[in-house]
Length: 256
Image 1 (tube, rainbow, N blue to C red):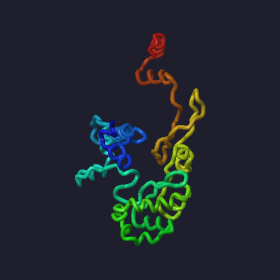
Image 2: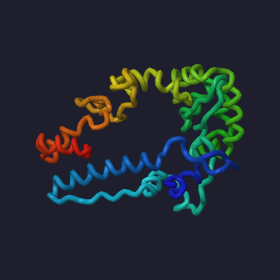
Image 3: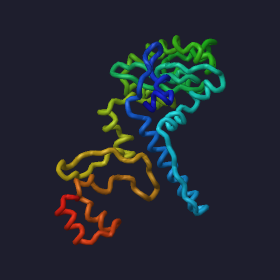
């Protein structure tokens, strides 16, 4: 509902298709992130002024704020942005393209990167073609240009396209399925996004790490998920001040 009310679904999907929800519940994710940011801002303000504040975050507001330049298109031009698939509205070719075994993102978003792409494709003459000369021209003629790039990229595998372009200096990325994500050298190894923990009742298992990487503080799970009631005694004693007799009585009564 957050994606629907906030406008995100109206601009997600393919031309002529139905409004589409993103694959993950982005409204909830964005709401949580905004709440965390709001709490940190309130803490900084309290440190400066000594006054605390209530942090009010609406899930729909979080989606609306994430729409960024899409909303400004309407505010500035009065034009309602439509669903345009995976391409960028303001530059081209920045889009998904087919490979032999999947899809890739090619981000040739300016003249320099476009020239590199053309060179790698073996089509340097395309940089002199008037209808593809500058960004605005390529945006206006994106359908024709997409056919040209797709004809080239579809000859190679995903990894081959990515390597050819990245080695030449043009950003490109695989459209990874999850089996590739969890094995990706940068994501899984260099960034450590899937640490292994020993979970009681399950054994060794991999979980998803935090995206924040600090200089001195490791952002990784410090313990496994607690079992039901595992931390009751510590919480009730330390935070609520219950003595051992009261804890025993609550256990006998089935309260905890």
